[in-house]
Length: 326
Image (tube, rainbow, N blue to C red; front, side):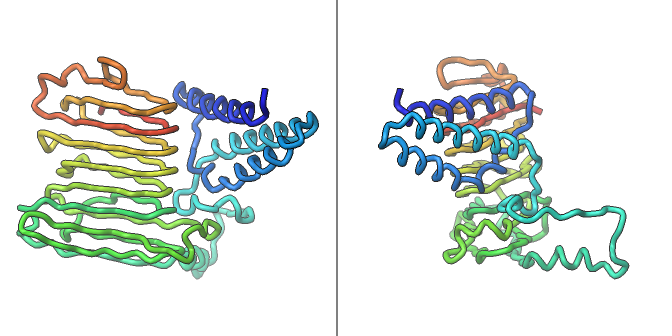
């Protein structure tokens, strides 16, 4: 058997095994902890190329040993709960002992932690005419943790805690649509993971009809849309973690997710009928409360009778998809 095929076989067995153990609740695996160790796969590929040319048995053993040790390390790191405030590069830093019972009387500990980030507050005011328009929120970035942190009397507010990168929020209007563009620009430090990540807490107005479109190279997003009129949520991500909760304020809602390697969790209300269409390759699927109609098509039992429906389209290469009802 060729060495490269054996290595790919072991990698697929590792990923499939982790997903299976996670689905059965044996382990809690945080894929986001693994992403910032991606250079080790370049090392594995280099070792494979170096020794595969010589067809040496010793070289093959070295390559396999490096792979097994690396996967063991990643398996260990993946089970450690990440720190949301700095999950990029957090584990590259030196360990710091923190005593929760002791602190400086002048509060210097809190000041030191705050100065590690730059605070940025962006917002767009709400006009009464906005409630009669569809509002499209375009979000793009990488190495960012996004969170929906309640409502606001403005149209949108974004509280950014950043270590690097430039963030902007712009607004464009037409007769029928308001378009908001939230972007991260970071040409110089695009791959700067060593200083930690960026956190963005959104607050949205509940009055408009929302379309939310995300393009996330790598990062995480946690959005609770239960109390918002979200007509469409579209997600296009690479190595990402996505957790969303949809509401039932509209007769029809669409959720479209396209991912490379991602952990995706979607919650929908029980009184809404739901249909799922999947094109998921080697991805793991857990659709609690759904009936399988055919390959790649799932429905809730109340899909045909419900006056409110949610359509979910999932397209992923090697991801973990979970859809549950609440």
